[in-house]
Image 1 (cartoon, helix red, strand yellow):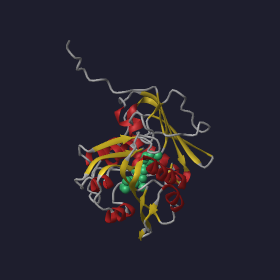
Image 2 (cartoon, protein in one colour):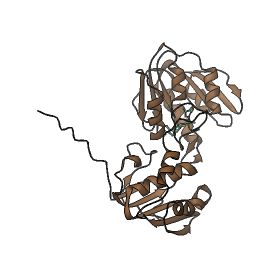
Image 3 (spheres, rainbow, N blue to C red):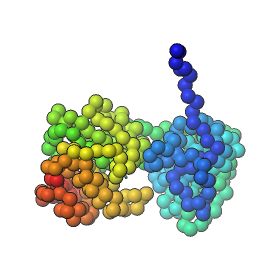
Image 4 (cartoon, rainbow, N blue to C red):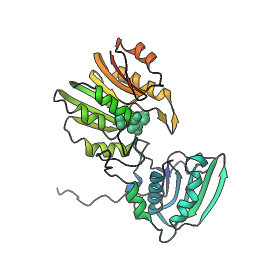
Length: 312
Ligand SMILES: C[S@@+](CC[C@H](N)C(=O)[O-])C[C@H]1O[C@@H](n2cnc3c(N)ncnc32)[C@H](O)[C@@H]1O
C-alpha cells in the first residue's frame, strides 16, 4: 500500500485566543483555539494558515518585542477584515498597544476598563512591518547567551546570574536525573557534560523554551518535554534533580510555585538521590527542604542567590 505523502494543511481556526483574557473584557468563546506557548498542548500561532481566521483575542504579554511578535502573528493569521482584540494591563504594555497596532497599519478603537487597555482593529488588507516584528521576536541566538532562545523566554538573551551560580557549584553528576523548568537548556548542557549521566529529562511549560532546548541540547540521553513540571512527565527513582525553579506565575511572584517544584523534586528522587537547587536569597525554600529531605548542606550564597544541595 502506498503511503499518502501529501503534507497536512496548516491548522486554521475561526477564532483564536492567546492566553487568558478576562471574558468580562473580551470574550473569545469556548471554541476558540488556544495559541499561547504557555499552555501545554496549544497550537503555535506560528503554524496557523495566513489569512485564515475571522477573529483573534490576544491577552498581550508584557515584553515589547514578544508582544509585537504576537500581534504580528495574529494579524498574519487573520483574514483581511478579521477582528483583532488585544488587551493588556495599562502598566504592563497596555499603554503601548494602540501605537503598536497603528504601526502595523491598523485603525484602532481603544477603551479602558479595570486597569486594562483594550484595542480593537480590523485587519487591514496589507498590514505593514510584520516581517520585521516576526524576525525580532522569533527563535534566535543572542550573542551574550550563545544558545538558541526567544524573547519572552526566561532570561532570554543573557545567562541568569542564579543559574550561573548553580553551575559554578554543581559537581559532575551521575545516573538518571531531571531539570524541572529547564528553560533553553543551560543547566542541562552542563549536567550532560558528565559522561556518568545516563539520562536527563528536561521539562518546561514554555513551548518557546522547549523549541530552543531541542536545538541546544542535541544529546541522545536527553528527553525534552513540554508540560507542567508539577505533574508531567511521570518520573520516579531518579538519582538527581538540578533546577532553577520559577518564582513567577503569570507575571506575579509566586512562592507556592517554587515550593511545588521542591516537592516534585523530592517525589521523583530515589532515597539517597540529590537535589541541586538555586533560588533568590529571599525565597523561603528552607522549610520545605528540611521537611522533604534528610540532609541539606549549608547553602552557598552569592549575589543575592543561594545554592542548596539536599539529599533525600
Ligand atoms: C527561573 S527559570 C529557569 C530556566 C532555566 N533552567 C535556567 O536556569 O535558565 C524557571 C523556568 O521554569 C519554567 N516554568 C514556569 N512554570 C512552570 C511549570 N509549571 N512547569 C514547568 N516549567 C515551568 C519557566 O518557563 C522558566 O523557563
